[in-house]
Length: 129
Image (tube, rainbow, N blue to C red; front, side, top):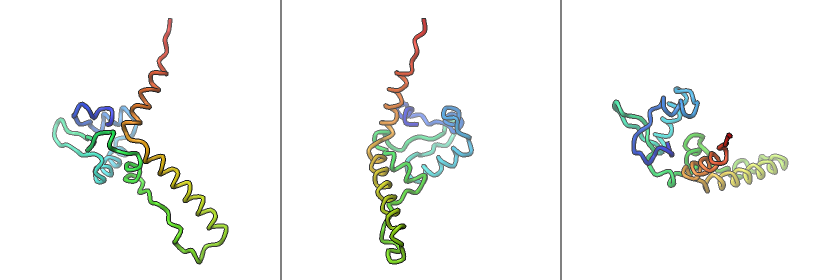
């Protein structure tokens, strides 16, 4: 959808599913969740389908995953007194890993993904003689 954004035309579920090799029903669920999260909008009618609500450069990956997966920032204040030293150490490491992952996801947009994909496709071109 990000690559198709410039055309202004909505993409139908069957088009996206075929291009991305995703089952239609699963894709319907994902798109419904993204629509509720304000990332995509649906358009009804014979030429209906789904569109991004904003430019791909304005949609960060963290926002998408937060919508789909319900990412939450872990807090170490939960049950501080009932934790063992071992579980506290593990929790701290998971929190650090979560912060690092969230930091990476907040750096990239859908536009960045498209650009990375396009640059890799250029390297994959084979020339035959």
